[in-house]
Image (tube, rainbow, N blue to C red; front, side, top):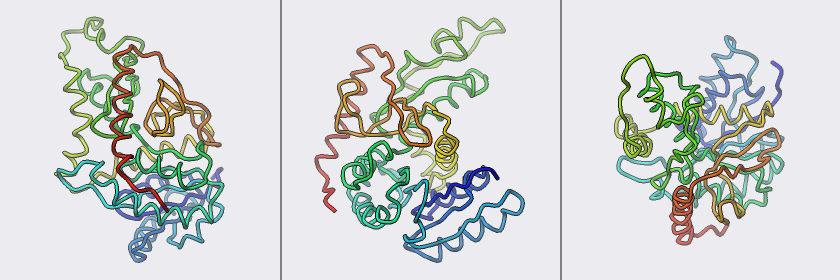
Length: 317
């Protein structure tokens, strides 16, 4: 195995353990540490994954304490109270902010040079909290943001037009939540704008689709899955592993992670998702894609929604 990354995952619940499994299958680290307040849970999940590694590669998966995170290249935060059926991500805000306070105090002592990937919800709020209170450089802190929303968007368009998902190019911007939106001006299938694809198709009539229905599907997917199985874990596990792959192999990938904006589109002092270049040293650059004024207004609305919540929260360590 070529890479010798060490990755620590804080939280060994459904999401944390699935992230650990996805990282192991993709062989993205030589060592993976699982930390959880329920120590037996972390031990059991690590042991279960580790016993499959003879069929994968030399990945050492084990449980540990915060001290075991020393020299981690990447730290992934999944700890927090899970979203319940009918509950929004923002309803979780203060509860998970309080949990993250205790995590920040411990993990930054032992892994000050790591890249921090926030997965727990509300991901934009917790990423903001980490940037504001941890003392870690801002370009080393980001959340999965709308990466999963973007995957859901691409999957929905691919399903509608029966085309390979890899040929669908587009993003979801803004909050990982109800104020997210699709900048349709950037969405393409191959080199053809999504709205013009049906007219370009010569093999027969393609189904019509409505922008609002697609965006509604993206926003409601998490809630539908939670109502059915009480958690979401597989897609976010794969999403997080994909982000770690970009960080590990320094691919300079363009991903819709959430990070602290510093004037892009006239927005500052809030974390939300726009296309961002990431590599081995974290955030290299954010991309200010050309958007029509209506889409810029949607992004600013999303920022305002998040700021309204932020102003109601106590981030004091």
